[in-house]
Length: 131
Image (cartoon, rainbow, N blue to C red; front, side, top):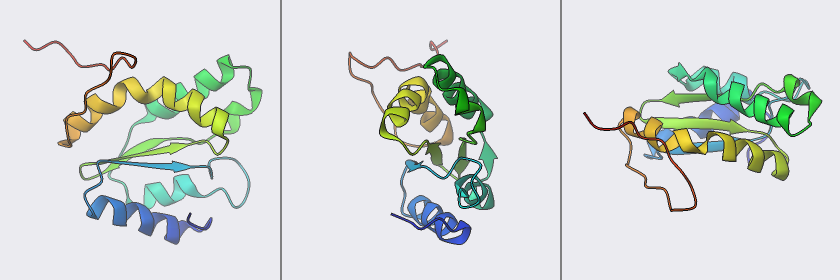
């Protein structure tokens, strides 16, 4: 667990990436409260942002009847070959959002040069057809 401080969160993300982690997931810190600084920390160390992840997480939460989903600043970004995913802080919301974006994660890791992950029969992952 990392305190709600930009530099501490940014350092933790950077350390995981330098250690070779392909996927780093954080939970919480995405709302409008003063102490919600996880997106700022991610932007401090990440190279690229993938807006579609946050858009889909917010949409899925809205579909689940959570009108405050529009306040969320969830996002995904990368630092080198590491995908960094910022999820909500509540367990039910984490499940909703992770279920929504998971099908794209293995392919994103492939494109970043990370490990090739295979889904089980219960989890559908997207990979384009080989030409």
